[in-house]
Image (tube, rainbow, N blue to C red):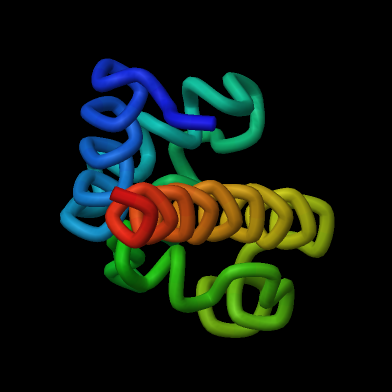
Length: 105
């Protein structure tokens, strides 16, 4: 089953964007996903820790990183770990689907 060119373009954009996001891009994405998760103080902690999209993906599922290194409350850390894991899985799925398409053509 082949995916549509629009889906490939959108998937490719998300993969590149997730890696290239700066802190503000990442915070905007998090706000879209969980509007009430980060207050100004929590957002500032992620800024101070310089959590970019690449860092977020690298720490996928790592609650301790968000709690101990970013100094966020346990509940927020758990949700960020979950979001980072979901984004990493989406990115991996996008790469796998692109590889399958290239391999089968």
